[in-house]
Length: 384
Image (cartoon, rainbow, N blue to C red):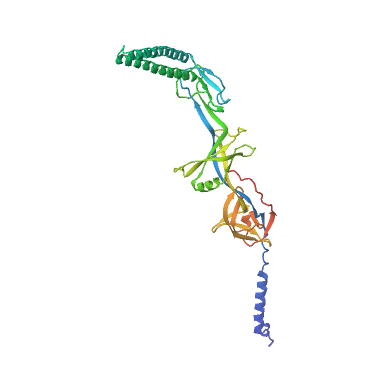
């Protein structure tokens, strides 16, 4: 009987065959390892040391340096207006006149009464002197002498009263001409020519605002008061007023007033900046952005504000290391000033921080620089 193929194969042959099949199947299922992710494209900036101003920002309102509501001190008909609405006027400039005739008549009457009483007083004093001589000679009694002397004294008192009446009438006549008490700009005319006006009545005749110099009033939280007072004790603090849609730059002034109490309802304190306003850029009632400069912080470590990121453990930045990998670095933010952030701990000058592209970064992963501009000390952005 001829041997079959089954009988010719050794049992270990089947084992080897199975192993070969398994190995072949494993090799067929093995895939190539995926390539590493490409470097994340980022924009960076260099950490630098520079002087950074210590500033307080607020919204301010422009106020007139002084405001006068002009009223009349006598009653009469308005007979003259010697300016135009919105015109600049000087201190002492004639603004209005009232009908003077009643007051001139009153002055004349008072002067006539004074002249009469002076004549009577002179006669009474002469008579008193004669009676004094007669009393010495024993011709008249003491009672008669005293009566004549008293009459003379009364007439002199009447003369003094008449003199006061003349002065009062003269003052009332002067009130018929109304002059500007300050240099300033007039507003709307409230009462027009020909109207009867009453003394100290409402409405007033005209409002005058002094706008050279001018104030800008603003409020800050009371927590800043101690620092403001500390810096103000060292010298005058500069104040800037940034005017919307004005490309000439901020107006320059100085801090001139710190209120004597904190507003308990708001927890703020009122301050005023004084501006020369020679160019009339500031106008009463206008709203402006105010920057109060307290001091300059020397050699502060700064990074662009957009480099800061917020995490569960606080704020951090991505630092690009020399091997072009990104390191997540916790930082301590001291304050922000405009587009710059002052860092007290976490980064050193000369290091590169990522300012754009943080979302695509894997900590420890590779990055590719799109650009690396050096930060510039720009003017603080409005609204910080």
